[in-house]
Length: 550
Image 1 (cartoon, rainbow, N blue to C red):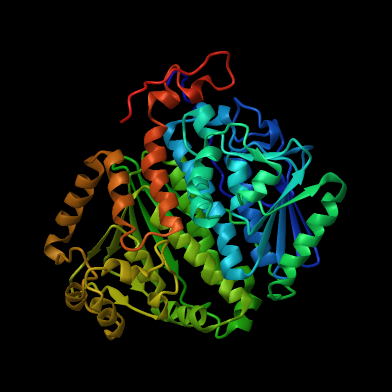
Image 2: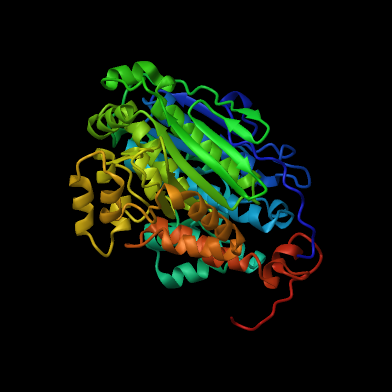
């Protein structure tokens, strides 16, 4: 790149509405309003201004937090209106100077996190029955329009100026990085030729043509704007049932940092920076599994399942943004098998809104594991408990190393959690994805009596390698040394290809295209070279392209 990438300031993946700088969350009855009013001078780091409601990772962390709080703290909400707080501007998309001055790895992780947040909005609609209305009070460009596309309905103000647009190709030499091209083709089902015109027209499409091409659902003149927003929100809210009237307040998660060890209540992350790896352990408590949904609701944020997955989620985001040199995660689950089994039974059987939300949170965090650009090895050694939800974490890993030693017992087993409770982006369970070529194995694993002994686990295909006590340390050491010696680029590409076998969905397309095409395009001189479009944007210089097709 012609410009030196700015050093990244540490990303803190947690916040609270009282600390929001860019969003305002207001709840009135069964309708919530999220107003995007980005504070221009409060970027995540110095070096850029967040003009025209453009956003950076700090803005998106607040959005993800707000959506999660609506799901847990305000179950009475049936519709969320997302709108802009600036005059004639909804959102100008990702901040260009921020992108231009960020490292390549930060850009990709930023786009990935933003993708996951957009998908979280869609999951809130599909799984929790919360409808989202994008009330575009002004122009929505790039990532701003991609945010609108994640909503159920889009209302655009008809003021003769406001438009929706994807300016990335004509102005920046890159692609809409948060699922835009996939959503307008697969979700909005817009014609290919119309999509081609739209994605290459920098000024975008407005007015009646935006409706005719299905880029938005409806127009509203300024004179009737407030009434139309209210009417559409009311219609969306009335289309779904009420979940509940009383929610639970999400408490703060503050880990303790002791040298190279980060300790949460149930998750511990231990760094070995010399080997470029971390050991991440989830500890399941001996007590604390509620006997029913009412007890789970009474426990609220004290319920270990909710707390543990919130902690795991934060730890994963921290690894992505703040630990780029870490290449390998060794994952363990330890603790009470009885607590795991009782928790999984409740998660699978209960229709209580709170239990369902915890289940969907676990599903989302497991998908975050799937999407993390680190090598993941499940280490099933003495004292580990890869049962049910714990086994799901192991199955999310690239390899499973199982200690085969009767004197050092390892517990493996299945519960209802392994029958599709936490589907992957491809729509399949992790067992179905693992045994895509031998589907009969899924039933064999689920029917196997628990606990599953190491020899049976090998026969069932649940272990990649199962050394005995004599060979364990040497085999594991060699495997770790080999993995971190490979090119990180090739590992990211390989893992992204291998983790999503089977059916292609809108979600797998979004992440597949991000990992492959956008990752590649962000490296090309046509985008980030001395006269690349991203480098020249906002300067007097015009981009110069290498015209050869590759």
